[in-house]
Image (cartoon, rainbow, N blue to C red; front, side, top):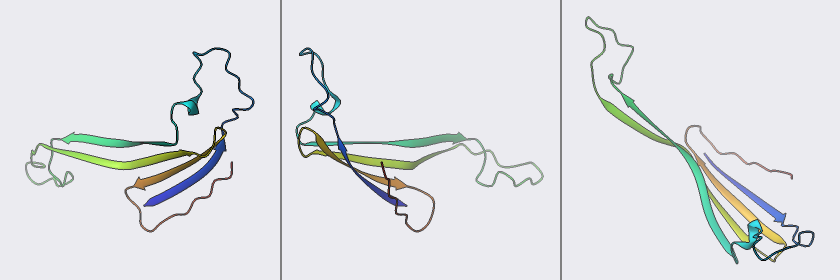
Amino acid sequence: MLTAALALTTTGAAAQTKDSADVVLPYDTFNKWRVGGYGEMVAAWKDYGTNRFFGGQYGNSKESRSTIAIPRFVVAMDYKLSSQWILGAEIVFESGGTGSAYELENS
């Protein structure tokens, strides 16, 4: 499933003041573009066969195998329109499920 989100936020820079040169506001760390992301990864080690419920006379076969899955991965992008307005977008990749979804967030 692929989901996309788009947000336009303000930094509130007019209300924030810098008392010293050491203070760094969160949106002062980039000039125009910022790309990032996050996600999750699941890894497992299994010491049984692919059909663990098969009993048989001697039980399930002993097989060592590993599985790795990435159920969710998000690419995030920010574009600074001005010192007060930031356009943010996220593209979400999720495994499992069929079809597509449209999500609108009012904030």
